[in-house]
Length: 139
Image: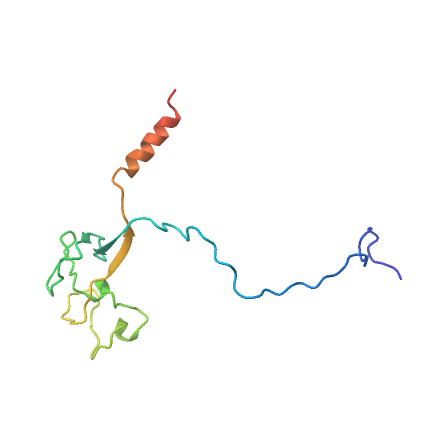
């Protein structure tokens, strides 16, 4: 029998071939942090979709409420938690009729402000980073 490759070890059957064991069940759960910000302080906020101005969650959003910075209406579909561009009438709730403009103020009774969780911001973060950078070059 002629071999294509003449290196030692190629094609040798001196290795014992053991069958691979199949995994049995799910992987064991690891303890510890899972992802960015695990365990960090978070806060619930409602922000204007257009300018990202933060608004208190406790304030009620009336039909004619406008953003104090950009002046756009806050009681609109794009600021609602049920807004979904892939759903029927672009809303996850059952609507009797489609709302014509999603960015203009409307009289929808199902409106619920879109509240998101953000990491609590530290005011001194930028100064701490600058101080740490300056400390590298102090003699």
